Image: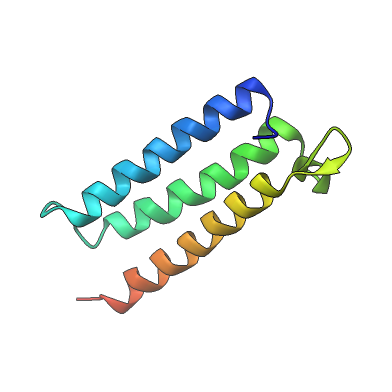
Length: 93
């Protein structure tokens, strides 16, 4: 995967968290307020990468070369945060 063992473990746990969120979204328990929780979760996972790898562009590099898994996963999380924020505002009461 191109991650250290710690980041690889966090990546898998993050994926399980997203799968749990999808399951909740598809269930009858989904509520509008959970869009905000989705935004927060996605943003926290983006910030976590920088907390573990450093707060610079270097966070997306592993052993001197660009790590495409890190770039793609963080871009997808950013898209999720933006979409969930839009859905929260679009489904207003």
